[in-house]
Length: 248
Image (cartoon, rainbow, N blue to C red; front, side):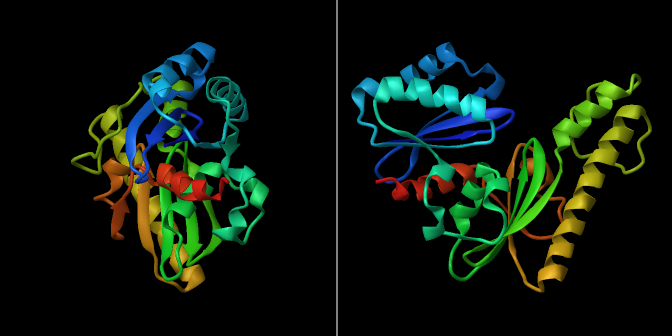
């Protein structure tokens, strides 16, 4: 079996993967809560004394958290703990941009779907809202927009009269009170942002794409985007599973 994990700015997912590359256990913790105690508890939940772990691979955009995980996991498992960028990814994907400036999570997303024939736009509703453009086996780069949740929090923090708001699809565009007005602005504003960026990518590349959405708000927006989309909540984890074959 193998362990793979996605260390994000907000959440960290750690998954136990069986010999058939299926997720058999998934644990999600807040990245800010990662410490020696929480990691020991996490490893206990995997019941590692009863199984043989062959490989451990993470993607991380929080180096401090990964270093903590790397230390504790090595102490428990006595095997090398890899970060995705430690691997020779050129064997799987042709990266057309500055490799150092691509988040490991975005590379994992790309690896999950990349192939010889299809083109993809991967839209990830994370701390930032990201678009990654894949043409067959080529990673062409992408777009980074402010994250929905982060933007909502910033507005409520900076504007005294705007409370914390739970975002949902409004019934009407024109809000009759502050909460509905903010919901409308964020929901339809982001839906419009998404449609516009997707159209601009198509226009610039002169290509058609399959669009995959993932991340926290993907369920909310999946039916309000004009383009046909496919929801895949485990795309990052699946990319890590795919990349794990590079570990010898």
